[in-house]
Image (cartoon, rainbow, N blue to C red):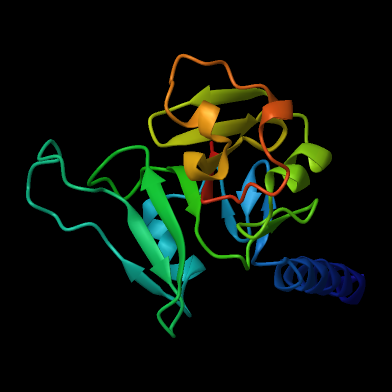
Length: 185
């Protein structure tokens, strides 16, 4: 009986370790990005990105100084991968509330990355909204909690300068490139 219990426990441990190792570190899903999840705390970043470099925000002693509170993640070779924003500054137990995707290595389950175009996004997901900003438009996709930013230089001239225009998806060129995108939790 003892051997059976031991075998069951070891089998469970083996399968839990195997599934964790097989997790794609670059897969973007609604509640996770690789090993990051919507419940990841700041204190966990060193473990999750052990092979990468983490540039932590400088601590000035006052979270209201207007300083950037983001954690930037780089490969050991210097390529910037992600920029992580915690829910609270200067709190190691704060969860990560948004992740700015900067590397083309990261892809959604429908193969959308920073190398994708508006056409790719539009074909893969239902567009929830389009916000017209000064120098860019932000395309929201609620299905994956994402906001895709496209520079207005990618748009026709008649859409670039008037922020009051409601931009419809059919007005955005298929070839418009993503500048970056953010996953919000």
